[in-house]
Length: 242
Image (cartoon, rainbow, N blue to C red; front, side, top):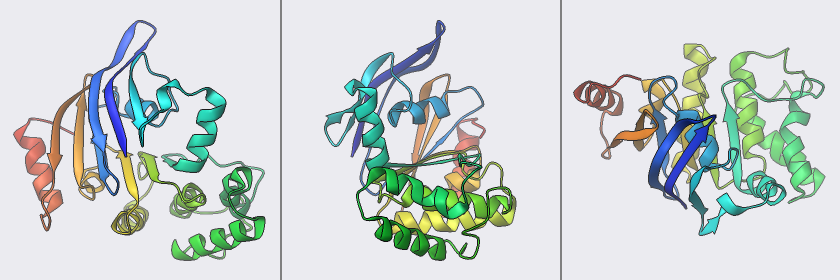
């Protein structure tokens, strides 16, 4: 689905990413780990076109999104990608339901009625029906993050990008979000997440460890493996930490 070819990123004479190359296949669940300042989030933003590259290219289904004009790239992201961040990027003056439906109404891929029905279905699936008319300050962190996933899914994206999706959640809410992500991936959704939490990374099929702007190591899990134990042992073996 996505080919990352020798991408580098510099900012104010500081090299953040160094010639990174890898592929994301349809149905993958990839977690990116690494210490603070290693370039994890910059990598996600660069691959998704939210940040420009200093060199290299990103091919999304053979389309070089690195060369797209910003207007075209914005439309491409709206229709092809979904985004979930640690702190929900929702509008304070809109209800939860209106925040969820907004990207669908902007994209105009379906009728307004169909978008609203889809939003209701997503909220039911995420077990947050009943909070539609509340504003974002009237719900729990876990409810808000599940609403963020609904919004990210509203346009049937081909890939979900997540940046520390459980970083601000308690253990119970984290478990709920992880269960949702597992189900989505099992159904074929391609997912790439940045995380410091081994519990999150253990849900992935592949883990990339970023250090000093480079891929220091890569771990692929075998089918049926005890991923959390295997991941922790792998991190110890490479003297890596989350």
